Amino acid sequence: MRNVLERPGEAPVTLALALAYVTCAFLTGPVEPDPERLFAYGMLRPLDAASGEPWRLLSCAFLHGGIVHLGFNTFALAWIGPMIEKSIGSARFALLYAVSALGGSIAFCLWNAPWQSVVGGSGALFGMMGSAVALNMRAGRHIFSFLAYEGPRALLSLIAVNLVLGWMMPMVSNTCHIGGLLSGFLLTFFFLQGPREGVTTRGAALRAAIALLFVSCAAYCIRPVARWDWLLSAWHEADPGPARDALKRAYMLSAAGDPDAEASEEDLEADFRELQKIRSTYRR
Amino acid sequence: MTPTNPRDRLFAAGMGSLWIAAAFPLVLLAVHEISPVAAVSIASEAARWSLRLCLGVTAVFAAGLALLPTVRAGVAFAFSMWLDSVRRNPAPLRKAQMELRHAETAARHFEVGRLAALQGDLRLAATHLSRALEIDPEIDSALFLLGKTAFQAKDFSSAGRILGEVVAKDPNHAFGEALLLLGRCRYVLGDVECAAELLQRHDREQGGNSKSKFWLAQALFAAGRAAAAEEALRAAATPLQGRRETPEERFYRARARVRLWRARGKA
Image (cartoon, rainbow over all chains, first blue to last red; front, side, top):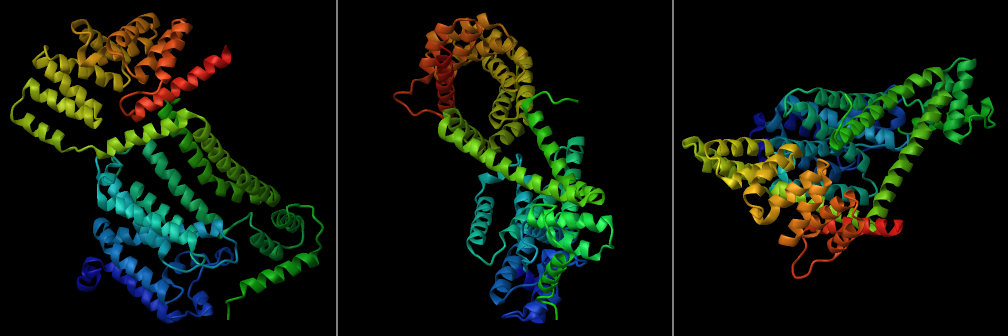
């Protein structure tokens, strides 16, 4: 942590992220943030990400839900950030942060209900911890050689403890943590360092599959064609005709489990108005 | 190219699953353009079956752990092998390699080969052990270790040939391990009568443990001597007295117990 304050040039991206955390905290309310301001500055809800605001998948990683949340995450960033940034370089570290934050947000959108909201950089911070594990694994003679040393084992314990705490505490999204952890680990292990055995067909196929998985999940978060809220909005915007009827049946299947369930246009309009009410909860 | 060994098959299955998972959201997006109802159906079925698969695999594994001694013992054995592999200290091998650079002798090549084999680097071990034997063909330990390395690398024909030479010189080399591994090579290569004879000789002269008795039982079953095989299985399934069992011995004892259950069930 001392590196960030005394030698900022050594970890510029970490310093920039810490400043971004603090700046966003002041913009939204540092002690008890205003939900409307949090929303305006990029709080993530799956239904908003699917309604033309995909930037929230990344912006939520710079916001925090209070002084304690901000304090913990800024401390964790200052502790692990410089170490990772000096190991992989500032540009890769910035990419790691972005991909881990996106990974956490994507996991949240895929797992949680559309109206649930999340803020915080801990998905990205878990990504950094995953990256540290990956760096240790790649550095050894054998990918599990690092377990012979106490430091890396302590890192694994720290990750496990944080995941358990996240599972126990009600206001913490462990989905984001796990998504960020996996994204950071996979990015570092497979993409940020050259292949151990040289370029092979197997390795290239594996990397391609992982990249495709990430991109396709992100695409699904932006366009969740099987989720009831997106289908309802698409039905509302569609012109009368067979396409609109198909969307109605899809919505009824998604929401009620039966595509042919009895529901009039007025019923769906009422559902849509309820959805709009949820959408406008934090909008001024 | 069709994968031939279990590890390649497992990797292929994993890759296939990963590609299916990666393409699934895009497939949903594409299907939606044709039929939104179909996309929702596919998504819900996929979610339902994924959950069933996860629960099923967990239930099978938990049932295996609870009911089958081989699963418990196998997990413990695999864990102990993994723990050994991560605890290995590479420093002695590096030191031996450095000493070899100063003066090339058969003894130094043998030492590098021995330490490489301990590290699990079978290719390096084979290279140096072969070189040691080129310089001094009389190092029986190097010949045995070369045969053992080939055995561990699953090159049973080479292992059989080399271990045959070791056993011809000294049947009790390495406390009978050469005889044991040679018997196993013969079994794997299909010469079950010879395998049974060698393993029975090992059992008579060395006593053996659950692993050697289990291998003997397999060879005897393959040779059509079921009664003697069951006798060997019973001996393999008997708990050890006087000292603590290693995870490997416990695993083979568990395999012997399950094999006995199957044999009794058929009877």
